[in-house]
Image (cartoon, rainbow, N blue to C red; front, side, top):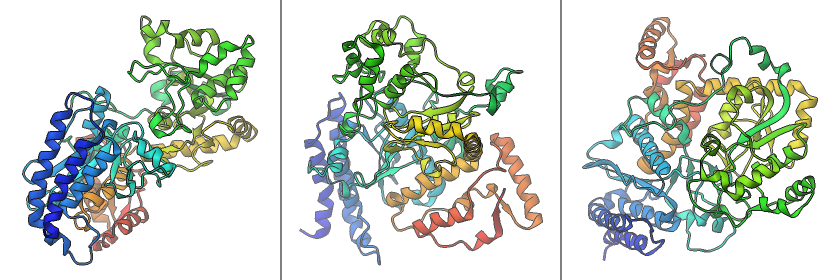
Length: 553
């Protein structure tokens, strides 16, 4: 059999592997397995016609043929564990984009729709010629779970050979939190955080489809004009803020079992993740062993099994002079007949005063000088960090093993005060900023300025260009032929240098603003230096037209 024929049969072999490993448990399993096999054989037939040409591309022997690429996707899904909510978006010249929208959890199913919309719109915007009818099919692997829920992650971190060839996997685009350490899952791509997706897609133009109600129709920020009653603005002046760390939030577990025992924490006897499970690692029950409440708190704080959120709450119960932290599970606080009220978890909360009696509004939280964004199920807070960066005080940022797509743009002591994952330095950091009020003022001002720039239309678009459009080239454009330059696609965001062109530009921009109700463009941040770095990364040639433009300040 020729090598091309072997390539063509590889996809079918991979499909068999997928059927045999990591059996699905949901009702649609048989249909999905059958569908994968059908697609594998169809892809194999097409691949035999084009694989020879693909292999002989000059100087690019490292690029997979269509059949090899499909086999890599099939093996990736199989080894990752299809039970773990891993998805694929496919494109063919005949059918366009298509994917399986099934997921066991309704919230994840909606995230799948949001992610696929952003993927499609990004490719249509920056790789339009890649979607021509004479182009070969491609498949994109992606996840939307709060963190990569594959046991291969823990196995790779500890050097265990569990059949996970992670270095050979296809790129996996995650729209959620990603590990800071890239070595365990080297093909994982930290893409645009899903809570930004709807805003980014709107900035690119009309949505690709209409999935129904939007989950993140806007990005929460704090505003004196919108969140505070008139006449009380003086309470939010820096010197009038309450000098305490403030936190309210859910008692989510910290990461999950798939991430590894040394990181996973479930300490509160209760999960609000929509599942009827009670953890076997309920550390709060240990409090009942002690007659003295303070002794009980100190004993539990000495354990490394509790979540960072539980640790902050217990710190607050021991000494409320510098930190005010309570659990605030919004659902059962606002639904007094919810069965949770009578649960073991609720009884412990009432007995030891661990739970807030009512939620705190943004206006109430903003009266405190020090905010903190304690990570939850995904190791981060997603929406909480940016919201708290816009409040009058400064943010104590919880630096965990996980990161969101924009974290690399933030700098410790410039945009936030860093705090370790186990909070072992929290009291020290508090003393640090109390002794140097100007540090907190400076950090707060820098954080607000960063958020203001980031959340402009141009800021969000450029973030998506860097975090999603450019990395997608590994799958859809391995030869570097199709990616359009950012400034060519969004010319209205750049100011021509000659005065006549400037007048035309401002006229065009005003019309765009009238049509799209855009956020102000003046303060956006993308620079040509950053754009050049992206082009060097992708190997894109310099554009002769670039010298005619400058970034508007």
